[in-house]
Image 1 (cartoon, rainbow, N blue to C red):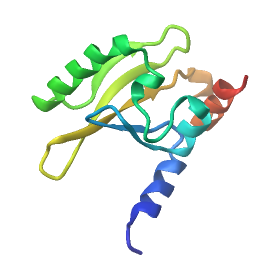
Image 2: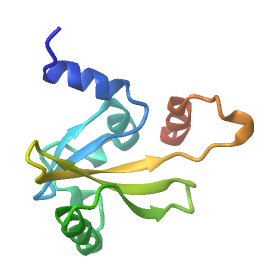
Image 3: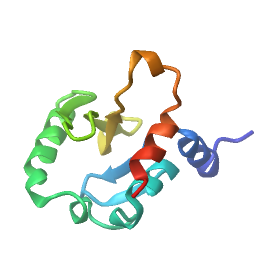
Length: 129
């Protein structure tokens, strides 16, 4: 089997966490299935990330990009008190190590008693109106 775009997209669609890949100019270039379900029409491929993020987050994102350019990898962003999720900025690099974009990784909360609950069930509960 050759690993091409369709296979990589299928792998990312099987991933229970959302992946919204954004390029260096803050344009959304890819959304996996979970991201499409979670964000709906608020996040669109080809649109600026700042259509769904407040423009006031730009300096914070630019600082994360400067740190990534200096060699840092995944960086803690915030703890979302509303959802209980920890959020991380994740730089994506090309084969030479240059940062070509980024995504935000959300770490879902879990309870010891329900540690075996699938992550997908968490997102399904989160996207319900």
